[in-house]
Image 1 (spheres, one colour):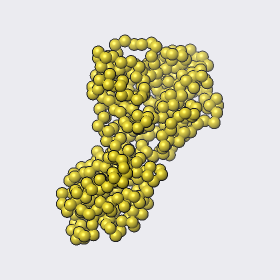
Image 2: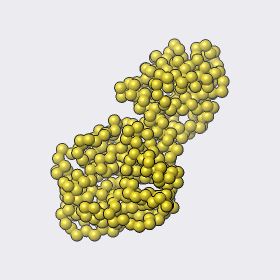
Image 3: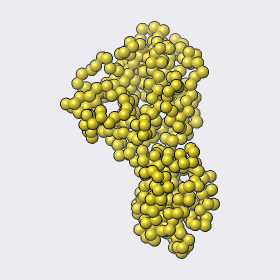
Image 4: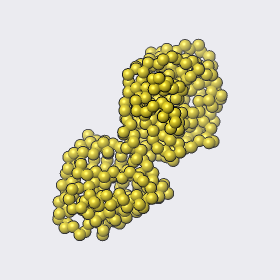
Length: 433
C-alpha cells in the first residue's frame, strides 16, 4: 500500500559527541518514528549532519526534497543550532518543517536555541514547531502535505477580465483567446442527454430558449476545458481549478453561469465566482485538508437575536444539498441559478483569508432553520448560528464578504496550517521565491 505522506528526516549531532552513541541514538529514533507512523514514508539521510559535512548534505537534500511533503530536523545532541541555521540558509528548496527534540544530550536546549536564532535572523515571528519526545506525528505530516500541495503551481481557467485582480503567487491564469468562441452550443442529442441527467436530481423548467441552451452548454464547455488543464495534477483530491466573473458572462452571453458552477462543484472541480481567487485558494486548502466539498457564500444578513448570519449565493455545491431546484437568477432573471437546501443542525466551518495580511479567519457555526427567504438575495440561502464569536464582533473585524463553507469544525487545523504556510512563504521570500 502506498504511503499517504513522504517525510525526510535530517538527524543532526555535534562532532563533540561520541559517534557510536550518536548512531545508536539515530537508529533508536528512526525505529520509533517509522513504527509510530504507518501511513508515512519516512526517509532518513544516509549521514548524520554535523559541523563538517553539512554543506555536502545540504546539496544532496536540495536535490531530493521535491519528492517529500516536508522534513523534520532531529536534534540528537546539543551544539547543533548553528548547523541548522547554516543548513536552512543554504537550502534552496523550502518545505514545511519542524524540530524534534529528545530528553538527553542537551537536545531540547539546542532546539530552542535554533528556533530563537531563526526568528532573530528573520526579524519576524514565524512558527517553528518543536516536537518533544513524541513520535506519532501523522497529523503534523498531514499538515505538511496540505501546505506543500497548496503552494504548488496551479493553472486556473479564468473567464473574466484580469485587470485589477490579485493573483496568488502559485496560480497561473489561463484565459480563452476569445470568450465568444469558447462557449459552443450542444447538439440536440447532447442537450437532451444532459437534461435527462439533470432532471434525475434537479427540478428544472426548461423551455428551449437560446439562452437556456447556452446556460446548459456552458457546463459542458467548462468541464472539457478543466479536464484538459488538470491532467498534470498527480493527486486525486484536485481535479482542476476555475474562476469566473459571473456578471461578465451575464453581459456577454445573457446567461447566468451559476448552474454550470454548481454542476462542476458537484463533479469535484474547484470553482470560484466574482474573480475571487483568494476564495479559490481557500477552497483548495479545504479540499486538501478535509477531502470534503465546500461552497462560497456572501454574508447577506445578520440576526442579532439569534447571533446568526444569513449566507447566500446562486450557485451551490450540489453534493452538499438535501434538495435543489434550478430557477432564474433572482437579480437578473437570466437562466440559471440554483436554489438548494440543507439539513439544520449541521456544524460548519466558515473560512476566509484576510487580503492584506493573508492571515486565516475560521469561524465555527451551526446551520439553523432559515427564518425567512429573501427574494432579493442570491437564490440559495442558509442561516448559520455563530458558536465562537458574537455577530457584532464579526462585523467589526471581518475583512471579507465571501466565506467558504464546509462541514465540521476545522478551526484548529486551519490555524496550524496558516502558521506553516507563513513559515514556508517567509523563508521562500528570503530566497526570492
